Image 1 (tube, rainbow, N blue to C red):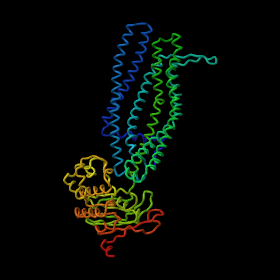
Image 2 (cartoon, rainbow, N blue to C red):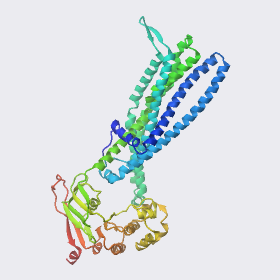
Image 3 (cartoon, helix red, strand yellow):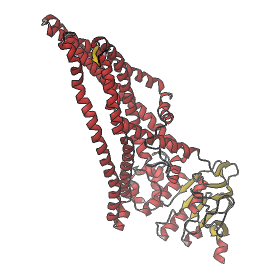
Image 4 (cartoon, helix red, strand yellow):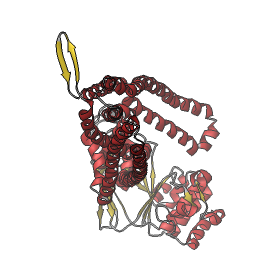
Amino acid sequence: MTEQHPERTDWRAVWQLIKPYWVSEEKWKALGLLAAVIGLALGMVYLNVLFNTWSRDSFNALESKNYAAFKEQLWRFSYLAFIYITVAIYRVYLRQSLEMRWRAWLTRHYMGEWLANQAYYRIEQSRIADNPDQRIAEDLNMLTTETLMLSLELLSSVVTLVSFIGILWSVSGPLAFALAGTEFTIPAYMVWFAIAYAAVGSGMVWLVGRPLVRQNFHQQRYEANFRFGLIRIRENAEAVALYRGEAQEQAHLDGRFEQIRANWWRIMRTTKQLNVVSTFYAQFAIIFPMLVAAPRYFSGAITLGVYSQIGDAFSQVQDALSWFVTAFNRLAEWKASVNRLAGFHAAVALARSQERGITVERNNVGAILADRVQLHLPNGQSLTRPLSFEIHRGQRILVEGPSGCGKSTLFRAIAGIWPYGAGTVELPQEARLLFVPQKSYLPIGTLRAAIAYPAADHAYRDLAIAHYLDLCRLSHLKDHLDMADNWSQRLSPGEQQRLAFVRVLLTRPGIVFLDEATSALDPESEAWLYELVSRELPDAAIISIAHREAVASFHDLRWRFVHEGWGRDDTATDTGMPRYAIRATAIAATATA
């Protein structure tokens, strides 16, 4: 499985994740919201500058016992506070609005990319990315939320630094001292102290907290694997219960949770060390400006108001310079999510651009034509020799052969979702193809939606649905069309297979592929359904994979996959696997023999 390295960030790949929304059809709304949020963020910095001068004037009024000036400062604080509260509220509100717009667009975009051209199927087949559900649901949320917050906080820190470093430079004054008989003077010494303090703190935080990036990357993956294990038990509850597999499932889940626990302890240890550094840094920063400014205040060089202003300006400068320190934990989580998204983005691009060894085209002949189609496994192992065949309207073909010979894989190749191999398949331009697997997919929702899938819920009239439910011996479901449920869990395997035939009869395809679609049914029900499909769809071609000989009576041609030895084929290296060919015989001739 290919994964993005948890500690390596290709910033071009990060830009490819961030850029699409800002050049999309929603770019003007997005840029307008972003401009408003940035304007409010800068407005808050300006208000902090005003509060800084307010603090100086208020303390000077207190020091001189000037009640009139003090009262004036109280009124000034009142309207500044009201404006600050309003700006703070709308900055968060508009930022959250932009976050959701961005996330909604990215989610639609990524789901479309993932679902297009069966990329989701190829990713699962080749295992080039894990847990796509987590990456779309959680990592996209992290990307939008934290990218905006961290970027805006960084911007505010830069503007705060520019705004307050000038104040600090003008009011802090010089520091003169003698060293080894030489006089030294540091102009605006508080500025240099703030820079040095932040630099030391940032360096220590980076050294201590660096492992968090890798640990958060693994934690997200372990959490997703654990959730997937729990979901699998829900989806297969009956099978687990019948096998009495609770102990095995418990052991399996315990193993996955142990990965979470062990990695969490590693995160805890790193976080504890990081908190020691950052907490000490933050607490000492409270007293540090008071200590370094106190000598000038007690010498009478500055007033109490200026002393207060220096302390506030130093704190603002130090906070701005300490952005990396305070945001490090979130940066580590953001970087881990971005790396996972970059890996997922690359996996989707790889799956969509993957060359098709088997070419699927359309023709105007009205038949399926296959020319030297050779089936391979994803690892390159060859399953069959080159196969050439035709499927014409109204034909009934039974496909047989040992397990693993490539029967279902042949269906997938005809459907255009199996790219591994070589050759060409041509499909009729106008004919509708329908593939019915052994276990049909039933989406969670109303029964009507499950029957109509992949068409819209109301694609078929109730009368038609009820008619075919009766014919497929599912009359007891007619009153439940609008009931929402997880039908793949509620219905038995036999009911699910009969429901798949209801879908076939409603769809009325020109060509039907049945991949052991009646394996869960008794012989009498199986015969009834095949007779029903033959009667209702007399002109359709029906190609079936089945193991019961009784099914042969509903077909006129038998394709048997036969083993033709081991060795090298025309395009692959020695695989150590048998290769199969198709031997076609008429059903009637076989029965006579």
